[in-house]
Length: 62
Image (cartoon, rainbow, N blue to C red; front, top):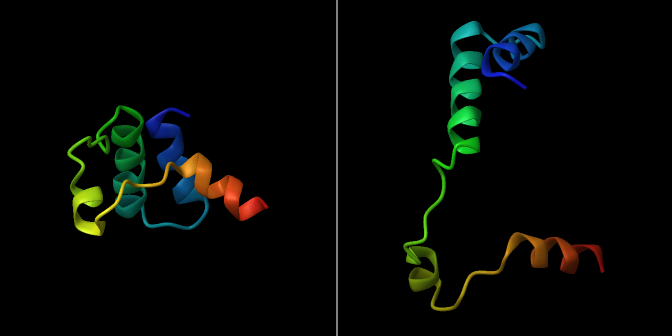
């Protein structure tokens, strides 16, 4: 969904326009890879490799 259309949908669902615009912008940036991080910081902090989301979902469905 284009960012402007997503903003309009959020406003239509009752969100204030400014907040809707922020959410739509964040979603667009995430789709462009803005959340990608291969620094391994989380693995270092927890002391083990992270679990891929696919594996977590699969375990939850068992």
